[in-house]
Image 1 (cartoon, helix red, strand yellow):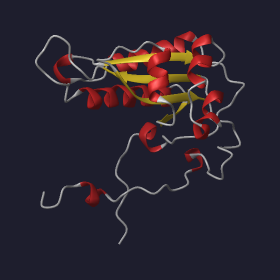
Image 2: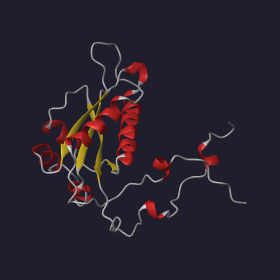
Image 3: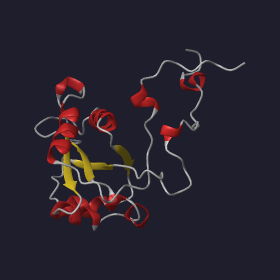
Image 4: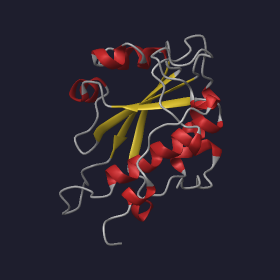
Length: 189
């Protein structure tokens, strides 16, 4: 018996992670501001908002500085994205007896998820990744020791012919594999 598909918002159902971006698309500063505004409104423990972002639009100096530290796998596609964002969390808490914030990574994830959905609403795709030299990026942008680079996100427009890697955009409603809902629940709950 087939389980009926749950009522899921179209922004969530159509989200996917492309590996090819349209190099002709130029992001506006207002697009960057909208993505940051989405992050700003993400929930966080105690409203600490323990995140910060190194933001670059393709072609600017910051973009060149980021691209220099990408791993080979992400260097093949990420430079073509209209916007590259280095996601940084306030991992170590200054002026407290805490060794680290147990919520900061989770909270940063919330902020990046908000940015991802905002991008989707704006007609941009997003791909989150970790294929870069974290230490070199931290040195490049003088990231303070109590902050930690976690991931990066590439934002941009997908070419009309798809991803170029054999995958088809979700706009053509090709099923994607996801774990069953029953597998998401902790056993016995």
